[in-house]
Length: 101
Image 1: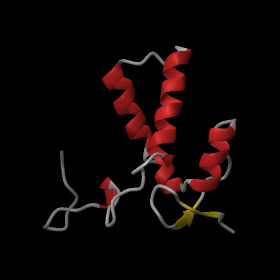
Image 2: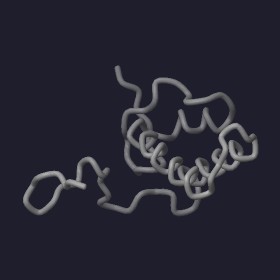
Image 3: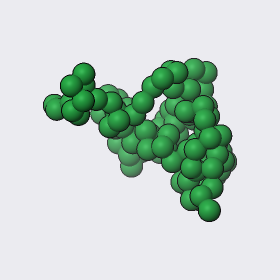
Image 4: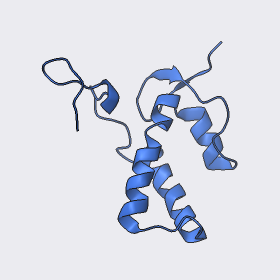
């Protein structure tokens, strides 16, 4: 049976992660309150932050910054996605075909 969570980011009950994504309290909180679908949104956001700020992931300050940003992304004020939002891979153009870049 698939484990479900009331996803704090997407605002609905969805399949959850199989295990905490990393150790510690934030990893446990993500496991308990973030769906797999919402978890899959983080890599794009993380890449934007890494590139924008030129973060060196070997730097403990950069790692701490990313954890703070992750917490804000999932649990901060206004963190829930807008009503009617769909993931980019599910959006389509007026003609029904996926957009091309």
